[in-house]
Image (cartoon, rainbow, N blue to C red; front, top):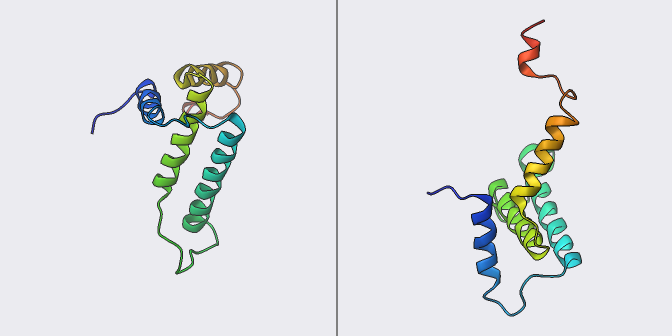
Length: 113
């Protein structure tokens, strides 16, 4: 399977959404969808790693599927606001590599002790 860039992912989602008259949801509706999907991911993580086993009547889902749903809605949200997620990612990484550069103990630093 060919790897896709973030630009390609955003374009693929936009192509999919553009075929419908309704288009993207409003920002508030998008936030509600994002929250809903995050809750579904939390439920699956709790089933796999937490203390709450799945009921026999609950359908089997994977964390991977829930992360995919969350990513889709996140891309929809970004597209609806004309946000380039690659640029957003680069800005966040710059922040972590500058402001937070000394916040965590680096693996290589431990070997120097």
